[in-house]
Image 1: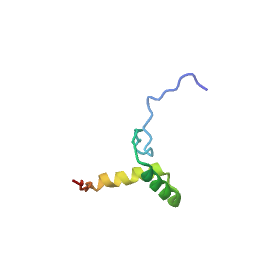
Image 2: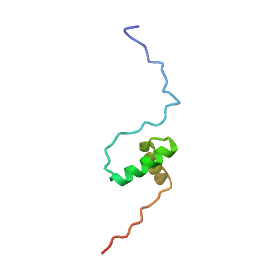
Image 3: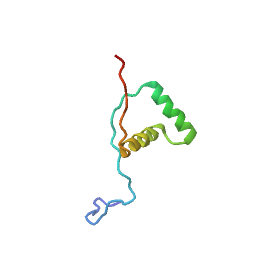
Image 4: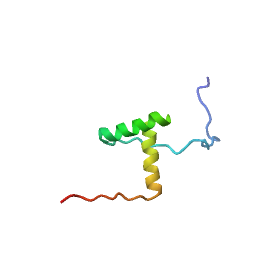
Length: 70
């Protein structure tokens, strides 16, 4: 193994997807269990399913519709 490698002519990996950013998010237990149930049926990890759902909402510019009880 060399002590020094020359990466001056290296190129970024074109196959690397956009990196994800780690955050902390608080979700209620029912929401987590819902996505875990979906994950079991699809074989996709539940965190990925949540990300895919949120990405779809952002792409479609979906707006949350809620009515607050008086």
